[in-house]
Length: 120
Image (cartoon, rainbow, N blue to C red; front, side, top):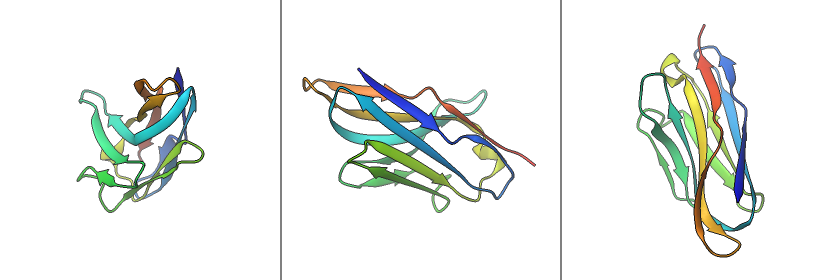
């Protein structure tokens, strides 16, 4: 089993910044892609940013230029630095990780979600 622990959500004013962190642990052989998705009330979950083990990054158009995803392969962690936050960024943010377990089985794990609220 693979567990994900997220941290860093909260309440911030428009224009402010937050940093989300995700740590993966458990029976992990290797991690391929790590990413963050979000789900706002009444809306479908959408991918925000992803990063592969080779450092290839993709962002949703809505966050390009404002959000930065990074990872530490040695620690199995991924961070999302969110700058110039807007009210429309308000959502529950989920970390997701895909890789291989110690017995070389593929897995995809999701975090429990962390609330980000952008409001004055």
